[in-house]
Length: 231
Image 1 (cartoon, rainbow, N blue to C red):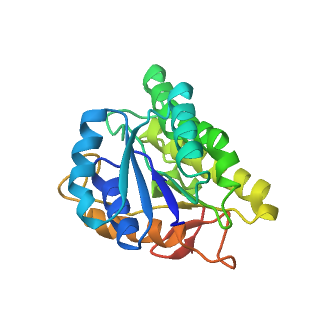
Image 2 (cartoon, helix red, strand yellow):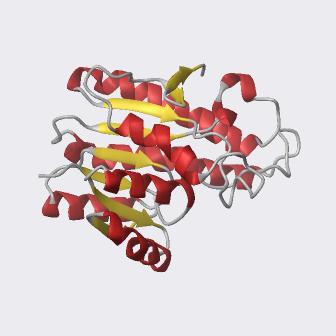
C-alpha cells in the first residue's frame, strides 16, 4: 500500500503546496480543511497530481478529529505522515502588554492545543506505520530568541508547538516515529502577505523533506531549509 499522509489546513497556501508535493512523490494525501467547500475545491485542483481525498477537519474539535481517525482506520488501517499545518492569527496589532487574552486563547487553541490533540487521537494509526513521521509547521516566531513582546499570541503558540514537538519526539523515539518542527520561512500566503520573500512551494520544501526522512533522520529538531536551527 502507498504511504498515507494527512495535511491539516491544506486548502490553500503552504498546506496546499505540501499536499501537491507529497502527491508528486506518489503518496496518497488526505486533504483537510475546516470548511468543506474550500477543501473540495482544493482537491479538484490537486487531483491531477495523484491520489487525493478530502475529509473535513477542525483541529479544535475533538469529535472532528475522531471522525478523521475513524475514516483512516477503516479505509487504510494506518497513517504514515501527519502534517500539522493549520494555523491562525499573526497578531501584529498587539503586544504582550496590551494583548487581548481571549484572542490569545483562541490562537493557542488552534496553533498549540489543536496539533497536540490531533497527534494524541491519531497516534494509534500512526503506530501502525512502519516509519511514521510527524511534522509540526512552526515559525521563527516560535524560537526562544524571538520572544520580543510582539505578536504575543502567535509567537507563544508556536513556542508551545515547538515544546510539543520535543515532548512527542522524546516520547516516541523508541518506537521509530520521528517528530520535528519546521519553519517554512516568510511565505506569500494570506497570513504572510504578498510582500513575503518565498513562494508556498519553497516554504513547503523542508516540510515535505522532513515527512520523508529515513530512520536515521533527525527527530525533536527545529528545521529550516533542511538544516537544524536553534530553538
